[in-house]
Amino acid sequence: MLAAVILVFAASALAPAAQAAGNSEAGQSKPGANAPKSTKSANSGKTGKSANTSKSASTARAGSKASPKAKRRAAMSAAPARPSYGQIAGLHATPDDLALKSSVALVIDQDTQEVLLQKNQRAVLPIASLTKLMTGTIISEAKLPMDELITITQDDVDTEKGSGSRLHVGAVLTRAEAMHLALMASENRAAHALGRTYPGGLSSFVSAMNAKARQLGMQATTYVEPTGLSSRNQSSAQDLAILVAAAAIDPMLREYSTSHGAQVAVGKRVLQYNNTNRLVKNPDWDIGLQKTGYISEAGQCLVMQARIAGRKVIMVFLDSAGKLSRIGDAERVRRWVEHNAGSLNPVNLVPMRTSNTFPGGSS
Image 1 (cartoon, rainbow, N blue to C red):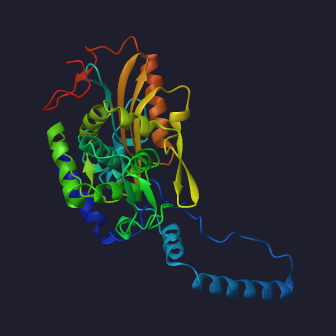
Image 2 (tube, one colour):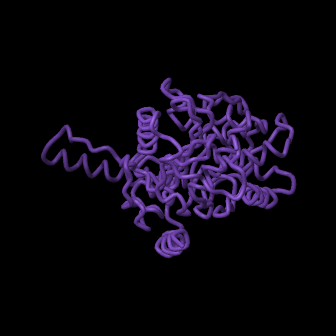
Image 3 (cartoon, rainbow, N blue to C red):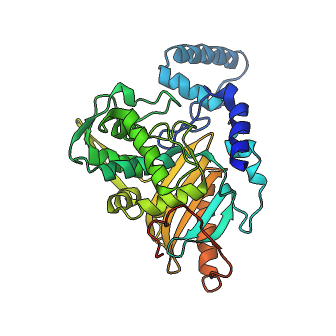
C-alpha cells in the first residue's frame, strides 16, 4: 500500500515537469557550471559602463553561438532542483537510529539473511543507474562473446535527460569494455549499447531484465530500459538487496563494478574512466560489489556488498539528499556494525523474507 501511494503521489506531482532537465550518474551537469563568473571592472565611471555594455553584447553573441548541448546544460544549471519521489512522499521524515540521510535504507547479513537495519525498505522508487546491475547480470548470463565489437550509434544517445558521454557516435569498443564502463563508470551509452545489441534487440533485453527480476523474487521491480535514465525503472530496497546478493556471486560483475579505473582506446584517443564510488579506493573498506546511481527523481543511490567485522553485509541506500550523503551513510553503517559486532545477533534482528532462498546465503 505504501509503495502504491508513493508512486501515485510522486507521478502526479512530477508529471508537469516530466520534460524538465535531470542528471544522470555518469553525465550529470554541475549546478552553475555554465553561469558567468562575477568580475570587478578595472575601470570606473563612464569607462566602466562602456565596458559592461560591451561585455553584455559579447555575452549575448556567445550565447547565440552556443551549441544545443551547451544550451541544454545552461538550462539545467538555471532550473531549480526538482524534488525526488521520496521527498515528495515525505519519506525523509522517517527517523532511524543512525540519522541516515537516505530516505530508504536496508542492511542485511548476506549469510544469515537477517536484517540489521531497515528504513522504508518496501517503498518503491526510481533507482537510476542501479539499473545497470541488472543490465550486467543479463549480459553475463547470456554468455555472449565478450570480445565482440560494439559500435555506439545515435540510438544510444540519451534523449531522456540530455546527459553527455565521451563515447561519440561511431565509437567502437568490445562488449567487455562496454560492460566494464557501464558497471564501473556508469556509462549510459555503453549500457544502452549492451541492451541494443542483445539477441532480439532492446525489447528482448528489457523483457529479460524483468523476467530475471521475477525469477529472483523481485516482485516490486520494473525495468523499461537498461541505463536507469528513465524514472520508470523502479524497485524497493528489499528487492535490490536480492539483486545485489545474486550479482555478488558473479566474478565478472564483482571485478568490473569494483575496478578503480580503466583506459579504453576509442579511435585515436585513449579515454581514462574512474569508478563513480570513491569507497572502492578506501583501505578501510573490503567491497565485493557496488553500484551507484543518480537522477533527480531518484536522488543519490548506492548498493554494496562488503565484508565488515567478519560479516558479508549487503547495503542499500536510496534517495539520499546531497552528493556525498550516500557515502556518509555507508560509513555510518560500517562503523555501527564494527562497534556492535558482538551484540548483533539473531535475537535482535529481523529475518529477511523472500519468495526464494536468498542468493549467496548459507541457508
